[in-house]
Image (cartoon, rainbow, N blue to C red; front, side, top):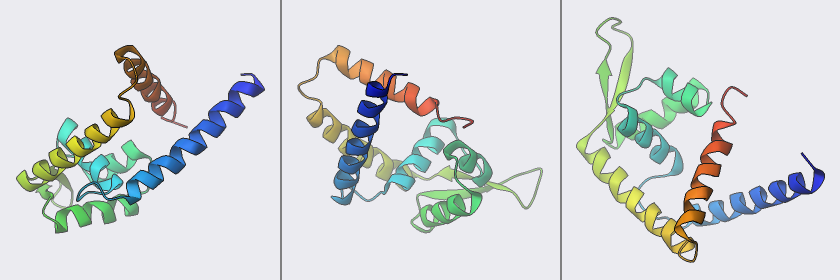
Length: 141
């Protein structure tokens, strides 16, 4: 990869992270980023345990345990006992969790649509594909 491309990507990622941090400090709804990602994962793929969630987001189990405990305390998820191992459990999203997740997701979609309003459909689709590819590149690293 040439030096100019690396420099451009490095700078643009730094600017993007700064802007995302700025947006996230202006509260959109009741969820923070970690809650949104965990609820999205459980909504999309079904109940999941702390270990599976930690692996998915490349976090340590203690971090995900704290995050899921906060979700459980708010009533967004509940525990499902593992029928084979009485000590293990998975988290499943509740009706309240679905409501909060859906409302927050719609606020996020509206904000993204506002930012990208001058982009063509093709540009938006390409940007989404490239972001997905970039994020996928982090797996197993």
